[in-house]
Length: 192
Image (cartoon, rainbow, N blue to C red; front, side, top):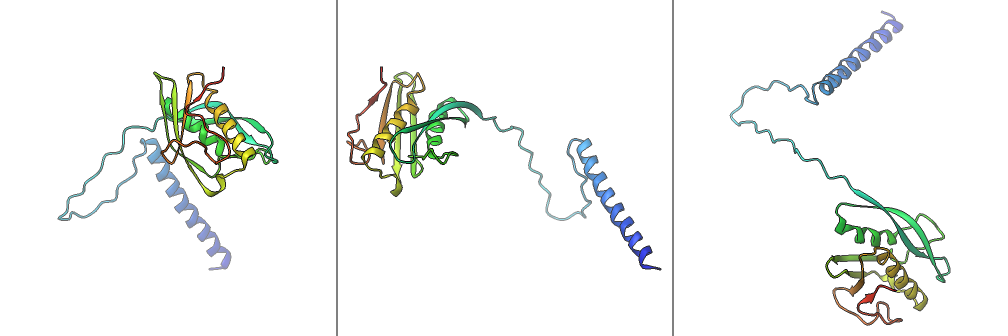
């Protein structure tokens, strides 16, 4: 047998195996996803099959919101429009706030990137949004940065017309100032 014959036989063998495997996969697709089961000799332990989960995950809702960042010199806010995803209507506020933590634009610097929103709760009857913040070491900004931080926070939550007042907590407590430079009103009321 020559090398060419062996090579040709090898190619045919690989092709036959590939075709066989492909056909098995297509049969499983045509029969609703069921795959052929191997025959197993009986044993003393019974086989238990768990049922497949019948519920499909709920699709995420999406909404376009305005987000606010600092310019590179920490002198003014930069406004961007982004699309947020959330499961339930109550999650829309936290999703909008979390969007403040990242930016795709190098000229829009996130003021919230080292901060965690540990709790976000909206009282629909009163129109009150309560948020609890946990600061990381990079969240401590100077006076101009703190001013931009508060402006971005207010503009983000008050773009939702149902939010009438904002209660801001730091590590679960009401504080006079978030970073020690500006007085923090409690609550922050929607501007007229």
